[in-house]
Length: 117
Length: 114
Image 1 (cartoon, each protein chain N blue to C red):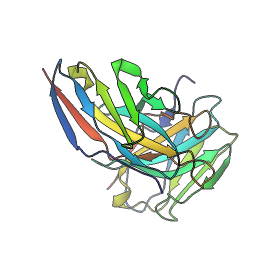
Image 2: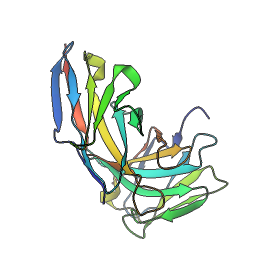
Image 3: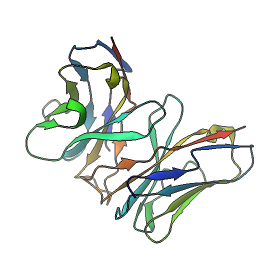
Image 4: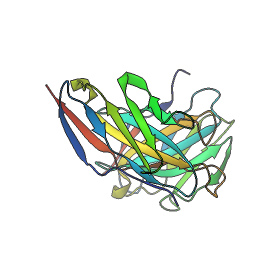
């Protein structure tokens, strides 16, 4: 079975400071990992994904994430947060070694990011 | 199309009525997914299609929920005899394929059952 945990319901950060949103996962095989962002009253937008290769993945809007296999983590980071980054962030995992034929995408519960001016 | 579209954007219905929600995926995307997002909650997987077939219906909450996809494109999610607990935002997504491909989401349909 696969699962993903986002241990923080909310992250508060001042504009200009570094932003980190935590994500840990559990899969039976190797993971595909994704981050999505949801702005108020809008659908989810894809930010970045880890498939294979370099553990540091760069995505949209200046975000990046580091895949750490030993810690089973995929934390989302941004060096300097903007007020416009305030949104709901979801981590998702898919087990490429899973027994089902399509690899269900499992979402975390989400982390609300609040960036204050 | 340019993105995933869903209609209607908002639907208010009375308890016991049937509703149909529509999803138009990105052209060429073979996989289509339905999720439900209740207020303050994460995403609950409902069903997915690969082409016109739905191999995994395990996420449908009850037999009042059904979905179909025709022509490998448009999908409809039907909820019969709606209940108040069905109130949520229903999100549709599509992807080029499965596994390592990211899903592109529509804006959702907000369903309110009175």
